[in-house]
Length: 419
Ligand SMILES: *Cc1c(COP(=O)(O)O)cnc(C)c1O
Image (cartoon, rainbow, N blue to C red; front, side):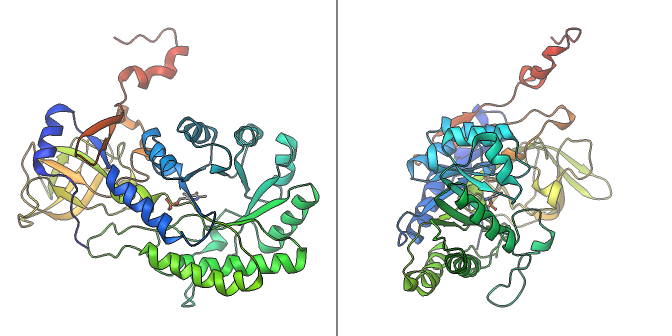
C-alpha cells in the first residue's frame, strides 16, 4: 500500500506558519472511518463493543470521538480512568485491565462502575479486600502457547507476564462465582502489532473453546468474551492492512459453529488502540540542519521525546517531505533530532528526496503510542496535538508543555528560582 497524506502541502505551509513545529495532527475523518469499519465488522454480534485502548492516544478530544461512536475505553491506571470519565465514557463502558494493581486502583475502578479484568488468581483476594467483589468481573487468560490456525506459534506466551494459566483461570471463575459475581467474562491478548488476517478468528476459536469447557466443567455460562487488541497497521509501504470486515466475518463463522450451535449468545468485545488511531496521526517536524560527516544527516526539531518508537524499538515510520511527494529519492540519510543520545534517529539510511532547511517532514503512523509515550529527557518539552476536522481545519486539543509545566513538581524546592 502506498503511503499518502490526508492533507496538502498548502495546508502544511499554512499550519506551520501559525504553529511552531513539532506538533501532532490527527485526522478525525480517518479515525471515524476506522471505528465505523470495526463496528460494522462486528455488527452481527448484539452487544459488541470496541473498548479503545486509552494508552494509545490518551487525549480527551480523541476519547470523545470514541464516546460518540459508541465505544468504550480500556484503561489500566487511575489517570486513564479519569480521562475516560472526563470524556463522557463511564460505567461498564470502561474496561479496567491492569496488572500489579493497587487497592486504590481497584477502588477507583469499582467506583467508576468499570468492568474489572483480573490479571491473576491472587488478585481476587486483593480486589475483595480493596472494594469487595463486583457483580461483573473478567479474567485474563494466558495459554502459554498459542497455536495459530496455520499451526505457526504466533505469540510467545510463556514469556509474557500477563494473564492466568488455564487451571488458574477456571479456579478464579469458580471462586468469583462463589463470592457472588454473576456476570463473568474472559479476556486474552496473544499478540501485538499483528498483520495476520486470521488472528481474531484463531483467538476466537481458542476463547470460545474455553467458553464451552467452562460451561461443561464449572456450570458457568460466561456473559462476554474480550478479544482485546494487538492488531497491527502497515507501517511500511507495501505491507497490507488487516481487513477488519473479513476478520469480523471469520469470527462470526467460528461463533456460529461453536457458540450459537450450542445455544450460547454473548457479546464480544475488542480493545484495539493502534488499529484505530495509529494510521491517522502524523508528527510534523521542520528540517533545522543538514550535516555531512561519515554519513548524511538531516536534523529535525522533533526527537524521541516526541515519538519514541524508532529509538525504542527500531520501529519503521514512513517519512514524507511535504511538497516533495513526487520527487525521486535523491539522498540516503539518517533523520535525527536534538537529544544527546545516538539512538535519536527517526530513520536510518532512508532514501528521501533532497531536503533543505525549512522543509517540513511528515512522520506517518504516529497516532498510537506516539505522543502518549512522550517524555522530558534532556529538558525537551512535550509538543502540542491538533485534530484536523473533515473540512481541513485544525483544532488544538493539547497545548505544548511550557517551562512552567516542566518545573511544576519542583514547587517543593523553595531555593530553586527560574525566571
Ligand atoms: C495495549 C493494550 C491494548 C491495545 O493494544 P493495541 O496493540 O494498541 O491494539 C489492548 N488491551 C490491553 C490490555 C493492552 O494492554
